[in-house]
Structures are given as C-alpha cells and as structure tokens.
Length: 113
Image: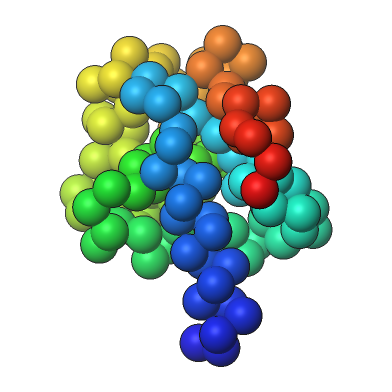
C-alpha cells in the first residue's frame, strides 16, 4: 500500500472512530468529509481492513442506501446486523430502516478536517 493510501486510510479510521453508538454513516459521507467526494470506494477498501482495529466501529459504515454492503467482512453471517441491532438500529433484509433517523454526517457533526 502506498503512503498516500495509508494516510487516507488512517484519516478514514479517525473519522469512523467518532461515529456515535447507535448511529451510522456512509462510505460517501466519510469521503466527502475528507475532501475526496469521489472516493467512497476507497473508504470501503479502508473499512474492509478495519475489522482488526479495535477502536474503529466498522459495522457503523454502510452504503448510501443503508445497505450492509460490508457484512461479508465480519465473522459470522449476520454479525454486522447483530452489532447494529444491539445498538438499537433497526435492520431488515440487510438494510437499515429509517436511515435518516440513525444517519450521522461527519460533515455536519465534526470540525473541519
């Protein structure tokens, strides 16, 4: 991994670490916050490897429609869903219900990067 990618991944993890309990955000919202609006896929790649990092709640990052697209990176079939549900987030068929209720926008919630 190049240094640029590594630095970007670290920034992604720093933002993800601040997602509050019981809230979710999207790959695109993190990318936009980091000034890389077209890099949602890159945020996804970063999150794929975040499972081994203790203070990064990767289960709280979903796609823009609220789909649990990263669920196959978690041990166990429904671990991502179970983690979200344990925080009070309603999930049906791998999709967060009432996404706007749970959505946390780093652009609005955090100071500028």
